[in-house]
Structures are given as C-alpha cells and as structure tokens.
Length: 343
Image (cartoon, rainbow, N blue to C red; front, side):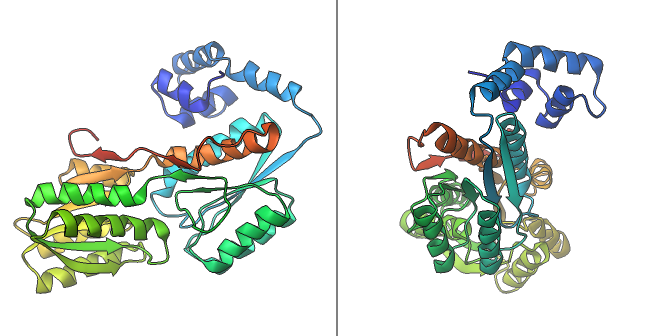
C-alpha cells in the first residue's frame, strides 16, 4: 500500500507542511531534511503509486467531492482543515477535485445554501459537518435518494439520514470520560460548572449529555451548577466563570465542552484566585497545549481532528470510484487524554 503525506511526516519526524514543501519543491527547507523526506517518499512509493493509479483509472472521469464545515475559524478546526487539505492534495493525483465551503457559524440557512451550490456544481459525493436541523436532514436525504450522491458526516453527525458513514469522536463517551476525570480530581465532591458552545451543535450536546449523566450516576455528592452557552466566545466563557464564582466562590471544577477555552484563564487571572477550580477542556490546539503545560488546565481531551478531515474525502473516493462502502457506519477517532506530562 502506498504511503501518505501523514506516514512520510511520521517517519521523517517533521510536520505534514514540511513534507508538502519538500515533495513540491516550494518554500524554505533544509537540504538534508528535504533529502530525507524524498528518500522516504520513494521508499513508500508515494509518487509512483499515484501516477500508476491515475493511469489505470478512466482519464475522462473527473470526480468532484464537496466538503462543508461549520465553525470554520474555531481553533479546533485547525487540524481538521489540515486533514482536508492533505486529502485534497493526494486525491488530486487521482483526478479528484475537492470543493470546500467553510461556514464560520452554526447556521442552518448558510449550510442549506452551501449544499445547493455544491449540487449545482455537479458534486459526486459530499462530506459535511451537519447542523442539527430538520431542513438539513431532509435536504441531505433528498440529495442521497434523488441524486444518488453519497454523504459522509464528520466531526458532527445527524440522526435520521441515510448517510454512509460518520467520522469523528464518540462525543457522549468522551463526555463520560471527562466526568470520570472530574470525579477523580474532586474526589467526587463539590460544585461543577458546565460550559457548552451552541445548544444546536450535536457535538456540544452529546459531550454535555455524557458528562451530566455520568456525574449523576457515579458521583451523587457532586453538584452541577447548570449548563451555560458561550457561543464558543472567549469573553463569554470568561463572563460565565466570573458570574458563577461571584455566587459560588467554592466552585470545584469547570468542564468546557466547546471552544473559547482561553476565557477560563482570563477569568482566573482577573479573579486572582489563590487556588483555582479544576479544569477540563477539549482539543490540543497550540493555545490549549501551552495552557496545559503552564498548569492552567488539568486535563485536555483531544479528538484527532486531522483524521476527521482526512478520512471523509478518501472514503467518498473509494465509494464513487471503486464501489467500496465503509465497513461500518461509524468510524470513531480515539479519545486521547492529555495532561501537562504527556502533551
């Protein structure tokens, strides 16, 4: 099996961006590093594999795969979009064009418009981070049933559709995992604040559901101070924590199920706490990783965002060109628990 950009990067001990620059002879890169990357690429048959595949496929078949995101500017999307870009570069060798529509918010209308636009451009498959909406659900089913266009959901899923596969975290299980970590930190006692992003985002909702259920079942002495929405805004997270600690200064823990985590640090700095509450957040972004190392958070749950972006276009290509359906309708990425010692 031919190598991928990710495999070359892992073997060479460099970033995927460095591999891309070396393979395409662009950007500044040390000669010895470029030489090592090219040697590994040759060993893995990176170039020749794609050339041979391209020649054996129907040269007249031009495949278009649409990709629709939401919250595209959020920090957790950095690795997701990197995976999408790498998949696009690799599939380009096989005559595949990726048409990306980034949406900055959780917007039902914008997502419907994006689906319509991509359909008008003649897509053969669609990868989407769906909004939880009856209109979106019906639109996707119509796309699959009437146009026979396969759909793969990623990062967020949507029930009641005939989508081929979901790629992403088991968000409810990750929420239960976070509850277990919080119970361990607090010894099963104290007041805990839950902060979500958007109530209309299934990812946030499932994480919160798993967390709340596990706290109630396993830690009856812990008190949940409700679930508050931050709209993934740093300042809103900060305000929620400051307001909560004004009425509950003995707050034991904070669980942030979405973006805007930097607001936690801002709130604690402003309040000048002698001992901060325990904190659990999601996503190994550069800012979160730095905060974890600086002991501002206790645990970070990473969701392998790169795989969530990289896998769906490849799954769709295999379905469209080779007739290979996914072996399962759920491909779950690992729930990775990070602390300051292993980040």
